[in-house]
Image (cartoon, rainbow, N blue to C red; front, side, top):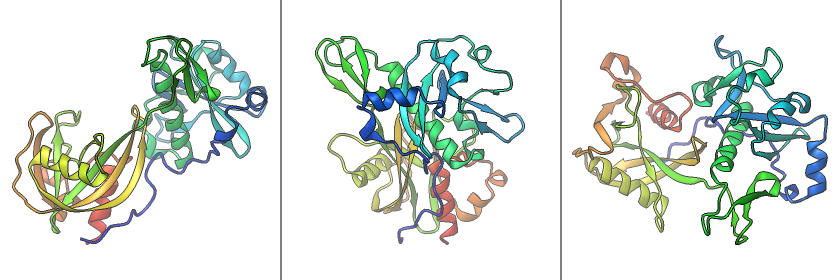
Length: 308
C-alpha cells in the first residue's frame, strides 16, 4: 500500500492566529493588548463555546469586544492571550464560575454549544480558534495547584504557563499524543465499535495513546495488536488533528495488516469487523454508522475509499 496523502485539511487546523509567543512575557505589550479597543475575547463556559445560528444549521463563532467581555471577565475565571488575528489581540476567557453567563452578555449573542457538535459547519479559522481557547482554558481551570509540591500556582506568560508560588516549579499546557489508524488489507478496512461510543452502531478506526519511550509506528502496531489481535507491517503517516477534548493531538496513519483473524479486547471494544469499500460507501444499508464528519477518523476512511 502506497502512502495516501490527506485530501484536505482536518477540522480544527488552519488557525488564522499569529500566536506571537515571543510577546507573552512582554508585560507592556500584553497590558496594551488588554486595553486595546480592537481586542477580541473568546469566552468558554464549562468547555462550551459561544455561538449563534446553531439551531438554524448555520453556526457562527461569537468573539466579544472588550466592552461586551467585561462582565464575563468580572466572573473571575482565568484568561490567556491566544495571539493576533490580522493584528488584533485575541484572548480566551473562562466564565464557568457563572451559573448562567448569558444574562451577562448583550441580547442576541446566541448560546454556549459543544464545539464538536458543529465544528464541521464552522469556517476552518473559527473552529480552530474556538478549539485553541477551549483546550487552554481546560488546562488552566484544572491546574491551579503544583504537581510537585501541591502549592498554589499563579499564571505566567500571559496565561500560557503556571508557576508554583511555593517551590517555583514551572508548568506548561500538556498535549497528549494519540495515534489513530485505519488498518487495511488492500481491499478491506478494519473498523471497531468501542465500549465508549455513544452511538450504538458506529464503527470507527482504532486509536490509542503513545506510551513513554515508544515511536509512533510502534504505538500503531501495539495498539492494533492489543485491541484486535491483528499484526501490522508498514505504517504510513497521513495527517494530524488537534483534539482539545480535553487535551490531545491525533496523529493519523494508514497501516498494512499482516494477518486478518480478529480477537478483540472486550475492555476496549464491543466488536470489530473487516469492511469492504462497498459496505463503507453504504453504511446504513449494512447496519452501521461512520465516525463524525469533523474527525480525522472519518478523513482516514474517506481518503482510503478515494484511493481505490
